[in-house]
Amino acid sequence: MGYGVIVGPWTGRTVLTWKQVEGGLIPKLSEALNIWQTGLGIQFQEVKADSPHFTVKLVERGKTSWSRPLNLLSLQKTDTLGTCLHEIGHLLGISHEQDRAELRQGFYTDGLGRNLLFGLEGANLRAPQLQNYDPHDPVSIMQYPENHYLAAVKPSMGDFATAKAINGW
Image 1 (cartoon, one colour):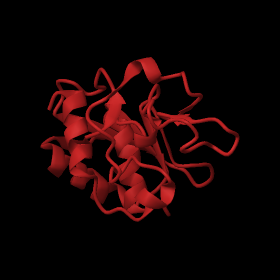
Image 2: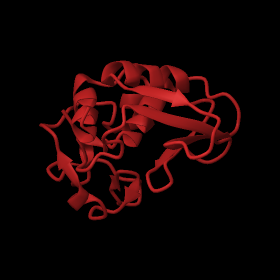
Image 3: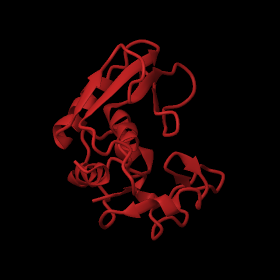
Image 4: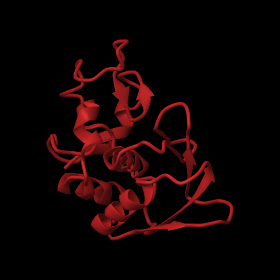
């Protein structure tokens, strides 16, 4: 299945509202949201009002990312469907598959010897708040290296099951 947060960020909510706060059209975003909502049985609804559950920003420079404390999904026009699916996986509470304690030892680092854990650097920053939801899923959209998910067109069945387990859907 997968690896992710213990307490789901969206528990009890089956309609997740979002608002784009910066930039223009992100070509693969709608397709990625539709894939996730179909697989999860939830709804992503774009709103114009203030206080959405999460916000989306088109970044011209910088990098694609998910910021959990800010509920901000930053994407680029050139991001692939797989990249959008991966970042939405973080939004749903799923971590990188290789961040599991049994796989963490040097499997993927940022080039400076630091493991990447749920969008943060350092091997111990998030470990107590993350858990295995089943054995390692090598076909997960959350699996590094990046070339694995860059070309992906859908999350694995384990990804859907993990998001459901995390958020109580």
